[in-house]
Length: 127
Image (cartoon, rainbow, N blue to C red; front, side):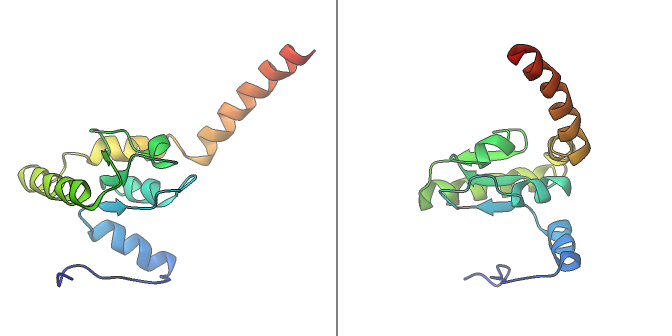
């Protein structure tokens, strides 16, 4: 494994924020992830996400804007990581604004507003 790659187990919230702040991006390889928080945590720090094009990742990652979604195979993922790294070398802030904006769309206050809008509509349809 390259020297700049570290496998970590459980980390504190403080350490997690620090890691997201210092990383180049996030790689998500879980094939059956219902709704992972990790992409949103990374995007909240302006970091792009490279994830398999399945499950919850398709709900959070906007392909080409906040990162890239790829088929679940090693070669395609490796090529995607290399492409994103090259793009970040050319423009370190390429994904930052869109990532932060997308993460904000999942903020609890925004979620609650959407739910409250939906409930009256649902009640009217049922009544």
